[in-house]
Structure formats: C-alpha cells, structure tokens
Length: 374
Image (cartoon, rainbow, N blue to C red; front, side, top):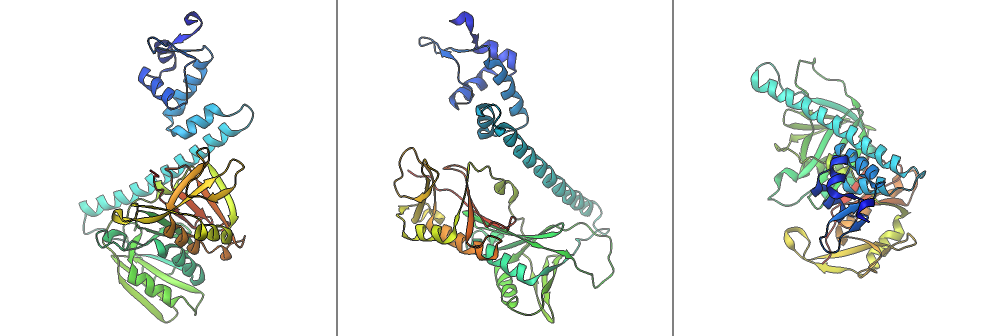
C-alpha cells in the first residue's frame, strides 16, 4: 500500500506545509491521512490529497481561520460554499485594512502633536443627529455599560464618529452593545483652524443618562460636539456638557467581526418566553466569579432553537448568562425595525460570542460572551 501513497515528508515538501503542520491539521480533522501505520504511527496520503494540501497552504497564507479552512476543503463541488467563505474572509480583511488606516491616521496625528506640540490641537468633531435615532441608540447600548469601579475606562459610552454615522459602543467585558445613528456635519460656531483628526470620546454614564432624559420631546435634531476632552449635546435651547473620560477604549472591531455557523430568525416574544420559563444551570461564571443563572441555547437536528439545561450530546449548544440575555432582548427593541417582533441570532459555536440583531437595523446589535459548560 505504501508504494501507492505519499509519505508525510513527501507531502510536506510538495505542498510547502511542514510535517508538524500536517500533523496539526490531521488532529483538527481538516486533512486526515489516507492510512496510518498501526505500528509506527507514520502517516501516508493519497496522490489526490496533494491538491488539497497545496490549497490548504494558500488558505493559511491569507489568514483564513480554521473553521473557514475546514469549510472550504469540505465544500461540495458546485455548491458555491467555498466561494462564499472566501468572499466573507476578503470582506473581513478589507474591513481590517480600513480600521488600520484609520488608526494609523490618528497615530500620525499624535506623533505630529508630540513633535510639534504648538502646531496642532485635537480637533472638535461636530455632528447633527436625529433625536429619535439617538434615543433609540442609547437605549440599545445603555444596558452593557460597565458598573465595576475597577474598570473606569468602561464606565461610559463610546461616541465614535465614522463618516456618515455616529457609532455608540458600550461593554462590561461580558457583553457588548453597538448602535449606529445617521449623522451629518454640524456647522461650527467658530472659524475652523488646522487641527489633528479626533477619534471617539468616552461619555461617562451620568452624562449619558442626562442626555437621554433630554431626548424625550422637543426638536428633531441634536447637535453634538466631541473633542478636547469634552462632550456637549445641544437640543433647541438646552445644553448638556461635561468632561469625557480620559482613557483609551478597548478595540471593539475585532470582537464584532463574527463568523456565525447558524443564523436563526425568530419572534422576539417567543424567545423571551422560552428564556424566562426555560430551565437554567447555576454556575460560577458571573462577574468576579459569582454564581449566575445560565441559559443553554440549543439547535436540534431539524434546526429548531430551544432552551434546555441538559441538551442531547448531538445537539449544538451555546451557554450565556440568562440575565444578560434578557437585557439584550429588551435592548433590541424589534418594534422599531422593518420587521416588527423579529430577532436574528447568530451562533458561531459553543465558545464563540452570540450576536443578537434586529432586522432592518444593521448597525445595532448586542454581543454576549459564551460560558463554558463543565
């Protein structure tokens, strides 16, 4: 039989993959050998597996994650699945490049300030946003603001201008919420002066709550000013302003580029009822290791999403903090979407975050960290 097969060393030389790498992908069930010598444990591969090995080497070079590599190599011919995986990966790479360019622009500005401190000052960013949209965005993220005094950098909402939108972000490390508001440049009250570009500002929680209270009624637009360590919100004749938090906010972009294995659309009321009445497990997985009630979401073989404390071994499962899940369902506000009452759940795996989206509001969603089941 060996004369008809390639040894692992031959396959390594022909494909450009190392012997150790081939062993890794065998263990990961990506590229298994055709035969393993029961006495020596030596691996042997069929001639037609050379093409897969060479494809695998190129997929590694472009940084495709393991799940994507497995999907490409396992895709049925003619299904289009391999191209969909590669297109999604290219989109993530392009987003990452855009993020890197944005960060480098800010880094260059900071270097300029450092080298020529008298020539540049942080720029104020002025945006006009619809008050109703801003209120909905604050409602969508407020539940995820951190209340831990040991994490002062998370004790507020990040207001991040990004082209024609204003992005709001909140996280306490166990969950994250994002919302986008359409924004236009507001006219400046003073002549513009040369300045370094400004990034987002962290608006402390009391200031966020004061702004939200002002958005109940009145003019349809709010004027926001961000920069110089300050945040200002003007609505008609009312003005609220205060100091922003002087911290660097964690990078939220990598966490929100998810790779879901399953997308499930369902009625928000049905999911809430299932979570409220479904069985839970008590685990020491809350903040600071405290006990919390854990909801286990499962997908049965016929694709139904259920809540079960002890799912069948063959069912897909994802465990999350029950209270955090209920908060996220409340914050989603599907009644504001184009498809009232509907939610979209994106599940990536038992150790991948859970994303909860509202159809019709692409830039607004919540992410919950998974809990490992014992």
